[in-house]
Length: 184
Image (cartoon, rainbow, N blue to C red; front, side):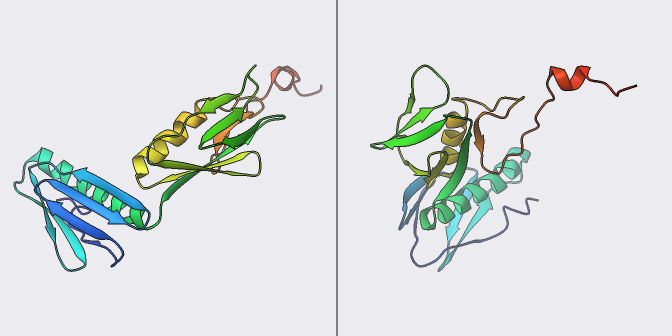
């Protein structure tokens, strides 16, 4: 039995939930999102809570139960307070600027990289080396943040590149550190 799937989703008065057939629409002050729920699950709406129930006890249904409950819960949280991912650019001369709604990233290439605005996602630049990616959809925020990171992954020897703010890098020792053994 799914322990996450059995939990009720509570929401505030600022969020409006609409259940129509197999679609759950969530609207709030930050935006709106829609989730298509499989036919083997049923969404029951209460006064200020929502419950996801299974129609049968198949293994596949049980695995979908907790997943879709959490997707709906993430949507409810996202329309109240947007999800965000923070990135840092590390390296001499590496920086980022907002150009309209696009990001202009300079990370050591012969030209600056322009990262276009994605639908439903907003960017904010703090200083000249920190990027905040935020939006209503948790999965899309993480996906876009990872795409930005792929522009220039951190170097394993110096740590130069784009990394998540809370990411710990393992820096490898260089050739000098390896060959310089203990003095005899």
